[in-house]
Length: 348
Image (cartoon, rainbow, N blue to C red):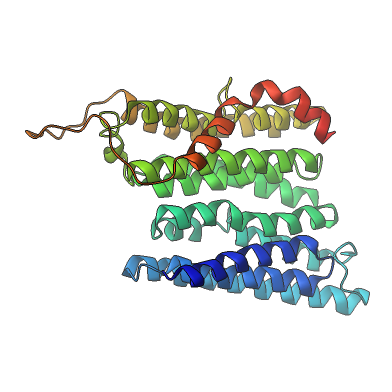
């Protein structure tokens, strides 16, 4: 892609998200979401592969549907209350419609069906943008409108997402689909605690972005898109294999890695709010996700590739990619747990 065009598209992505962050008026927020969607579509379809074009079309249709629902709900709210302000969502029908539309935008269950299919059709870097940056603007709106929404609806969305995210990933062999289901499960964790402690939602979103970025950049470095490709990575770059296994366990939420921190604090908050059943279901759903991360770790570190080759294998793969983003995201994804008291001080 032409570097000038790429620069315009990436700056439009940034502009759309910033516009939504800064707005308190529904029309401006909607405009930011639209700029965001239109900027990523050329990035998704840049390879002109039929699979990429199909994924782009699916993404465009779902995002357009969600944007239309947001517009309709905010117009309904403005018609009833007489103002477009986000903080005045007194109409329950409008607020429910908006939360449903935003759930469709970020891929919360049961509006998640587009997410694995779209992510599977994209290359890893565009998939990374879709899984991280594209979640920020809708999440800003969800956090602002959450207090006006029925708590049962948010709890149902959160529980459904963690269960679907764990269950759906069990049967997959494609790494991008596994990461899509992982994303759905993490979104569930963020939404479940939103009404009680929004700062924990932001903490979970931040750690999710770092862990997912580390996972995508690792797969990009090793050019892996299927589980059986992972079993061949250890002979080419053993250190990368070690860190990848740890990043996957961090995504699963195992101590002493960063991914344990948001899960631990969210379960603690749910217990404080007298919701032991919800907390138990969430913890059990996390085990489902952990199973498929362990499956990837097993394929990477404990199996030998079935392919035999007579040529001499390079022990170290030379790469022209920049390793700095991968190094930074991996470090954050593995080592932040000791910082929990400091982070708690900042978030409370």
